[in-house]
Each structure stands twice: as C-alpha cells, then as structure tokens.
Length: 224
Image 1 (cartoon, rainbow, N blue to C red):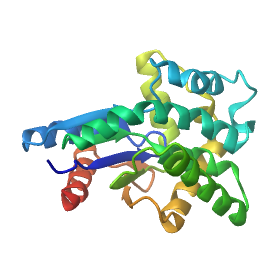
Image 2 (tube, one colour):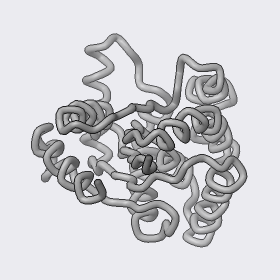
Image 3 (spheres, rainbow, N blue to C red):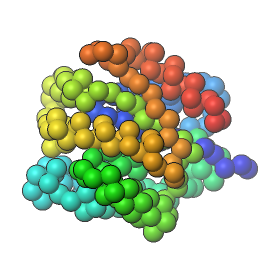
C-alpha cells in the first residue's frame, strides 16, 4: 500500500478555509479517493487547552505573548494529533487539514518585524514541529490569500450570524495585516513546506466561493 498524500489548507482570516476544505473533501470523495479531514486547533480536545486560554487573553493580550511561547501551545495540539494523521497516511488515505503548522508561521511570525528575526523564527519553528515533535510534513500547503481588511469584515459577519465573538487575533487589524505579510514572507522563504498561493479577492471584494474552489481543486490534482 502506497503512502497517502497530506494537504494542509491555511490562509488569512475570512478566506473561507473551512468552506474550501469541506468542498475539496466532498469532491475528492466523489472522485473515488479515501479522504480524511483534520481540523486545527482541536478545540474539543485536551491538547488545545493552552490555545483556548491564549486566544481568550488569559495570559495577557494574545498579540503580546511572545511568538515562540504561543507557537508551542499550537504545536502540542498538532503533536497529539500527529499519530492519527501518520496512521491514516500509512493506510493510503488522503488527509486534508484545515490549518496546520502554516498557521503559526502566519500569526506568530507576524509578531516579528525584522527580517533576520523572521528567518530565525521560521527555522526554529520548522525544527520544533518537524524534527523535535516529528509531525508529518504536508505534501502541499495551500495559502488562501484574503486581504486582511476584507477578511476581518467577513469573519465578523460570519461570527455575528453564528452568535460568536471574534477572538483576540481577529479583533486586531494590525495583527491581521502583519499575519498577511508573514504568510507572503513564508511563500518566498520557507524551504520545508511546499507552498502554493491562491488569491481569494479582487479589489475590495472577495472572490466567489466556486471560483476559489476550482483553483484549489486544480492545484491539488497536480500532486495526486
């Protein structure tokens, strides 16, 4: 049995990650693939307790918590999930993750201004997650790029419909813009993950969901 493929879908807030993951999973299943889905952070699992406290400002304002400290909270959650992901891949399944290590590379690397510091953090995070914790490296990391201001507006509208509140990251437009810059930095400088970018907006409006899906599907099929 050949090893399955592992695809991570990440992106700026409001880019429709969950929607695109679900559409992709459903279409690949129709194509005949055995597909498993992973969602991060796993808010109902014990391994995300520090993540939840962090996002609710229980350690101080989340954007003020050092990048490496916050990254460890998320990395522990992925480590706990990695055993199931590895088993699924060994069984030949196609695993689609809604967020993964790339989320740390965007939201935490975005806290660092200097290029040298960003490069050091990126190397440190790859070492932490992929060598020390030894979690699976995605065969493809898709970055759904939504402009920060558009994304914040869409996220606020979504949470209002669902009766939720924006978390500490989502409320801070400066943090979201820095995260957007950080993701783009990773596309150019991360040599560990196989990044591909999909632009999800034009001018000051989001692209249509089916249009984004077709591009996601096209890129994914290239590696299958």
